[in-house]
Image: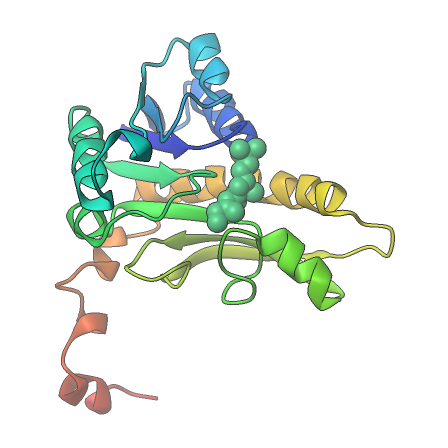
Length: 212
Ligand code: GAR
């Protein structure tokens, strides 16, 4: 059984969908703790499901590195097999990403690499595109630049506001997140392939020898 820590910042509707999926006895993963960078609204879901929570606020620390170390310490208490960023709106310090990666994934409300960052839905609307999407990625040192594990296109409707479009994106995000966590748990997705020892991160010489 894959043990999962989920980090949130807001309402945690995608988290709730994962908690509901994980209630099913056949689901191969369990959420063992929920963390946030504030007293997040989404902690209500944790209470509903009897899952422990922890909050580590950036403002309580002298700098981001110290905050990241404290957050990491709280995460590691649970010795999770996987950490999911589900609407966690702070960039994790590199040290945290290095320690948790590649078993650290993030959901994003756009079809990456399109519209990375904190305003994926707003940016897609502002760009006037006809379709955007939802993605689940492995977190790396960049902003939404990690390897893509799952993604799907979603049309932008002429009457869409940021809220209506985001609501439709979240419906797809939830499904992709649940499917991805299950695939990691069953080994269909091997996150080890994205680790520092994977062939993909070999020297340029080796890459040149790879078939096109
Ligand atoms: C989700 O759409 C998630 O992808 C997004 O925040 C929303 C959280 O919704 N995350 C990002 O934009 C990260 N760059 P929720 O709190 O209702 O689950």
